[in-house]
Image (cartoon, rainbow, N blue to C red; front, side, top):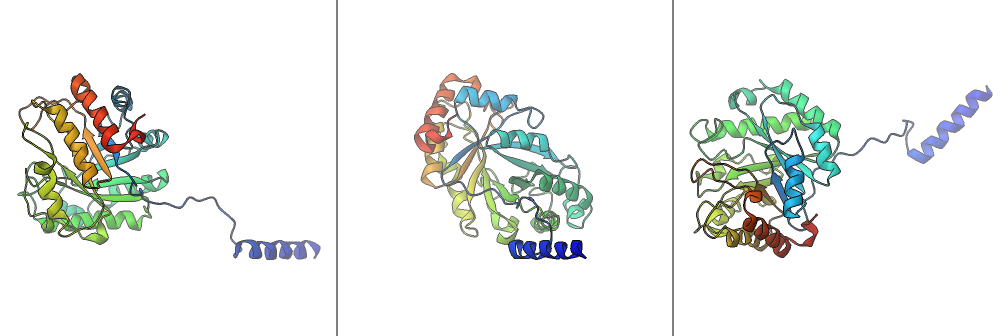
Length: 310
């Protein structure tokens, strides 16, 4: 009888203190990536997500601490939780480019990949920290199987919405959904036909490169920004960019960051990869060019701020 009374007293105290009789837990509330108050720098390095060494080298050589780190994930590959955790330990957010290769978008839209998506979403939920996800990037270009000329825009939109819906049903409230298009200077200008709708997108991203010495921030991104602002007011970032081995590479690097600052864009991601296959696949890597490396560090300090440096 005494034990029963004591239990009742304890329950009453719990009710007063907590408002319920369920045990207190330390479960973390899942939240997406906050929009940066000032621009941040991101990077993609070959070898990610298997290795952090490229990112460490980039940080050491440029003196710039990336706050966003990118990796490209083929369809049916699991979420790279270890890489995401390493990114978090370096005060960076992971940006995953989900690439729907070797799968049809209509199949995704009809639920054919739900098992994979639920597994991926479950791993993101278990990670419990903000993650940026992009699905089928640069869909307005013709070079990917999920893009223009390969699938109707309506099919892409249906697949995008279904992917987001599966993640939401799985409780992945820590995902920032990044809809990434290619600059309309190098792809279709009819961006709105690929737009899933504001209820399905958190941020908007742009890919665009400085291929020639005449390229400027305005010529690469200006028309794309104007087009996007015609149908979306979502935070807009440069999700993939670099300046090629042009005659005035250093001044173009400065112009890139000046443009990010002038347009109030919250992030810019550098594609730090050495390629050698013509105009559209140049050596974008900063570490191979001491002058470009110095220009990059100076431009970040000038236009982004000292807080971006390691």
